[in-house]
Amino acid sequence: MSDPKDPASIEVRPDRPLLIVDVDEVLGLFMHGFGRYVAERGYEMRIERFALFQNIYKVGDTQHIDVPTGKILFDDFFRFGSEHMEPAPNAIASLNRLACSADIVVLTNAPGHARLPRERWLARHGIDYPMIINEGPKGEAVASLATRTEHPSAFVDDLLHNLDSAAKAAPAVHRFQHVADERLRQYAPASPLHRRIDDWLTLAAELEAVLTTRPR
Ligand SMILES: [Mg+2]
Image 1 (cartoon, rainbow, N blue to C red):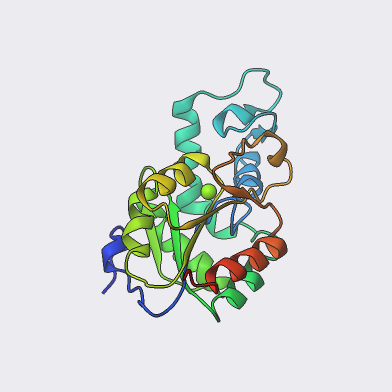
Image 2 (cartoon, rainbow, N blue to C red; image 1 turned 90 degrees about the horizontal axis):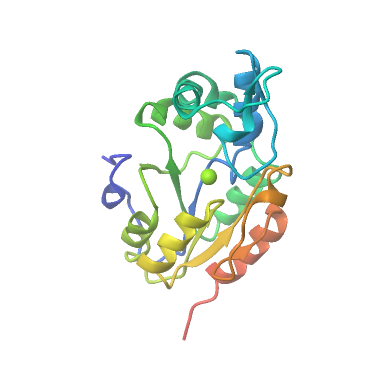
């Protein structure tokens, strides 16, 4: 049985390409979902920088919330609100099409208590693929998965530190940065180390191309 905290317990078939994909700001519109959640509790999200808690204010305040307040809202969102997040435009259909040519593993950084709500979210949207709940940079998990297929692998995430860590731990894995929230994109730093594609239809076509081309 697979353990959602242990990449080694996830089956990876050696004879299939592998796509490793993040949830928040890749498959799902996290900032929209979290923004709705905090709005019901007297806060508002004003996206003015590439940050999380620094974009959240008590309604009417000029100073953003502090980290302890943000952490409570964040943990509660993953307990009670994350199931209601909207999928990113074209993400679900694209992923299910890609599943015809590659194995899919969902690699998410979320609190441990997010597992069941997150699994229900994936199932509800018809993307019921194996999921790993990771902590910290994702490179080791990406390497552990990708090393077990003889075919190409790709990894999609919105955050540079996860992509940078994959570049170090598993340099052969194709890396793509995707920032689903259209308000956040202008503030999201990119890097020449990773391809940046914020539109799922273009991303899916590029993923299909790299995953189905075997190096000689
Ligand atoms: Mg993310």
